[in-house]
Structure formats: structure tokens, C-alpha cells
Length: 91
Image (cartoon, rainbow, N blue to C red; front, side):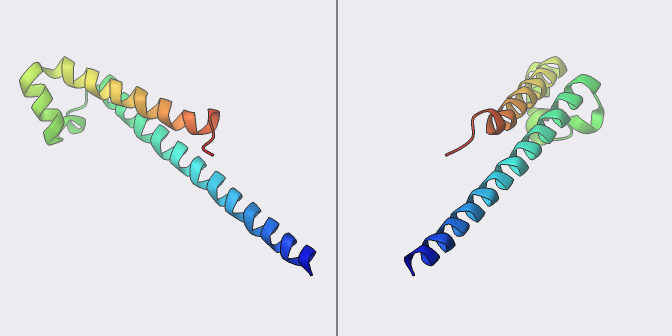
């Protein structure tokens, strides 16, 4: 009887681990995608990327180059954070 309960606990633990791995993968992909989008906005200097109120505030205060640098820094940080889920698994 105890071995049957033990097996069901092992299966449940395995399913939780798989769900956790899938969640980490989804977070990694999302953060990396947002980071790539931010880097693309910094590189392309497209007007539509600079319509955000917070980026407009940076642009009006310090200029377009500072806003582009902010996008680039955020992009690199998001990509690094996304890749950290793969390199250094949580738990």
C-alpha cells in the first residue's frame, strides 16, 4: 500500500517539476522577446517605439540618444534575465 502512495507522490512531484520547467521556459522566452524588441527599438530609432510617456519624458529631458540608450540597457537586462532562467535554474 505504501509503495502505491509513494509512486503517486513521485508522479505528482514529477508533474510539478515539469510545470515549473515549462513556466521557466515561457518566462525565458517572454523576457528575451521583450528584450529583443527593446534592442530593436533602440537600433531602429523608429518613431512608434518612442511614443511611451516614460520614454518621451527621458527624450524631452535628456534627448533621443539617452532614450535610445535606455531602451538598449533595458533590452540587454531583459535578455540577460531571460537567459538566467536557463543557465541558473530556479530551485
